[in-house]
Image (tube, rainbow, N blue to C red; front, side, top):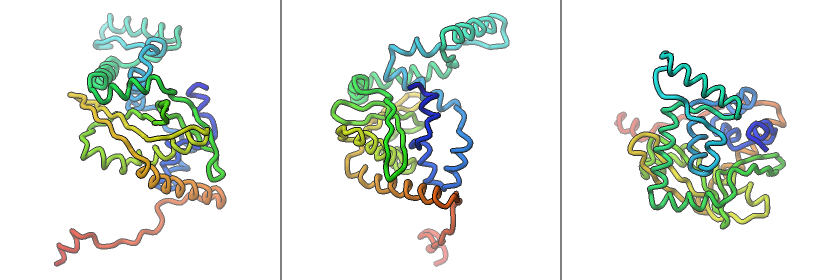
Length: 261
């Protein structure tokens, strides 16, 4: 199954489901208006390919010519690249993005911890589409890699993976819920699950790397959140209503109470 077929499948993905963390209105809008691929998404795609399937990169991508595209020589080089891309079914990656992806990949390879995990990830099952039913809802997922021991490995690009900062980002961005979502899918196949590992690399020099492992306790707590999302989704389907933020009771935060004193 190629990417277009996977995206077209009506099952709910994690990227769709996590919109419920904002509101059902956000989920419904994204469902009816799929997000077009942007620069960050494309950068993530090429970095994932360089890290997980480096041998496949020449079969999927081509680096765009470097230089000012208003110059005749560069224009001609781009025309040749576009013709080759069309002929061979390749995607053209802007040169600056390609170089960033290479720096990120090199940094991950040179780091002792991340290189070990990448080596295992390449021997795992890479980007396998998974389809399953949970709480009566059809779901789908495509983990970056599932290792032989049941570890799910996910590569993340970020502006800052300094551990004290990124650990908070894991919960703010609901990466722990993504781990629970993927665990549900892996286990639905009757396969073992052991942990969820995030291999993170910064997209700016010095392209620093960090690895985070989410244990079963973290995933168990996140799974309760996922259960709530799915229940909310079922309610929205039943009543055909997709509300926004709803009523919020406002309480005085500690800092404001201190100001009042």
